[in-house]
Image (cartoon, rainbow, N blue to C red; front, side, top):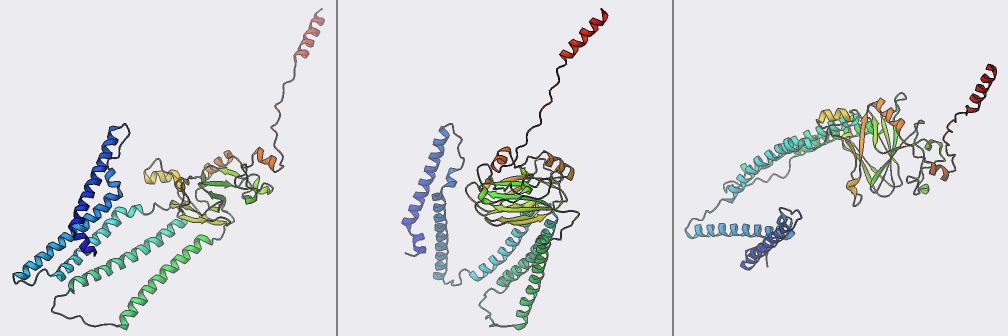
Length: 409
């Protein structure tokens, strides 16, 4: 049975109506039963039923079939009356093309104006501004091409619709046109690719300034958390080895390396503003993605491989609160890979502060090396200095008083 016959079949139509009524009755009965209890109810359970949407689709198909039948009856009626012209579908299609063009262009305008601000927040890093410039240029060029080509496409369909009075001209080849629509897009794409290449090099191949060396921070991803390690006073993050991972040493830090002895824990990521930061990225289990949208940073963390990303934050958290008029604003580190059931929990606050605030925070920060880990690695455990005990002067005072009494006698 063809789809057309299936849709127009009276039995199928009646069955669709009965099933829709049954689904509606069942859904409303469930809602009524839920209302009788103390539990909060969902105000729209019927709209969450898969069966409801299936039946809605069948009813839509039935409606289209009925409209088609009605139009066919209209055409047959005109033919019996000797009016064989009927509906000029070429004209109808041409008008629909014109209407679709106007509505579509308005939809593009609406999308840009309403949802445009939701694309990306303001860039808060040096390289983020370069990425935004490249993105905006690409968006402008592609939008212009999109609008012009669609105007030509739909206008052509409207003005050159079939009228029965003209015949299509066979025009298979034009060298000049082919050169134009090949060379111009190639030049534009070449410019965009070169911009992307130069921007990429400026981000990943930086010349280190000896007067402003980057701060190294190690971030290890795992299901479902981020572990952050800051260097100590030596400014170097110590090595680690997966073979040394234990219940006490979750990251597998090798404390035989002297650079690991003063490494600090990062419960949150704190960054000094206008100072280069170099992230060392690894993963303990599966593929994750290190993603900080405000800084235009995203890089995969791969098990068994170390990745690096360096950037310079330019706007403090307090400044961004003022810019966004949001006192609760905070930067976030997210995971951009669906890494498991609790993927949504992989969030870590990021705070950008002044250099003075950062120095104050570092002093208060705890180190990874605990007394228990010192015992495991046979390192000396620091002993708290003994509290000095005051000397007993009671005997001296008694002797002095006795001597004074003897002298008086």
